[in-house]
Each structure stands twice: as structure tokens, then as C-alpha cells.
Amino acid sequence: VQLQASGGGLVQPGGSLRLSCVASGFTLDNYAIGWFRQAPGKGREGISCTSSSDGRTTWSDFAKGRFLISRDNAKNTVYLQMNNLKPDDTAVYYCARAPICAYDYDYWGQGTQVTVSS
Image (cartoon, rainbow, N blue to C red):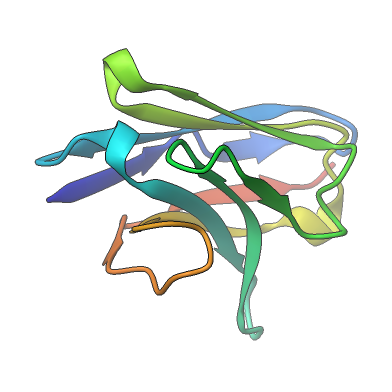
């Protein structure tokens, strides 16, 4: 089982990035995928979770209206579209797997760095 997060980079405030989480070793449609982030000196915080089995998508308040999550089960990939990025969004972004969104995550990707700066 592997999760590969990618798509991070340096972007100016107000810009956009799309992160990808490619899953291998399991069928994506049978699991929930969550996105998390960890800023320097801060704890990890949840962003969103999407689950095919129960059709649920959950969001943290800071992401509502700016971030979008989507999944392409044929490509075993979940995307996190991030718009109107702010310097406070600077963090390492991770994806992780869970049976459904409310359960513990058992596999984590390696993270991708997002830096929002002018």
C-alpha cells in the first residue's frame, strides 16, 4: 500500500495549486482519503476527507469555499484543488487512507511542500 502526494510548490498569494494523491496497492473506491497539512512549528490539521462508500465529504472551516476535493477512481487518484491561497496555507500537505472518513487513518503519503509567498 502506498500513497504518493505531489503537486506542491511555490505560489503567490491569491494563486492556485492542485495536489494529487496517487494510491497504489489497494482499490481507491473502497476507502476514504483525507488531506492534512502541517505548518512549521504547528500540529497537523485536517483539511478534507472524501469517501466513496458513504458519499461523504468533510471540510475544515478554513478550507470551505477555497479548496475542492475530487477523486478519479479509474486513475486511483484524489485531487485537492486549492484556490485563493494565503501565506497561512504554507505547510507540508499529506494524504492518508481510512476505511471511512470518521475512522483512523492507517497509511500516509510522504507529503508535498506548499509555500505561499510573494
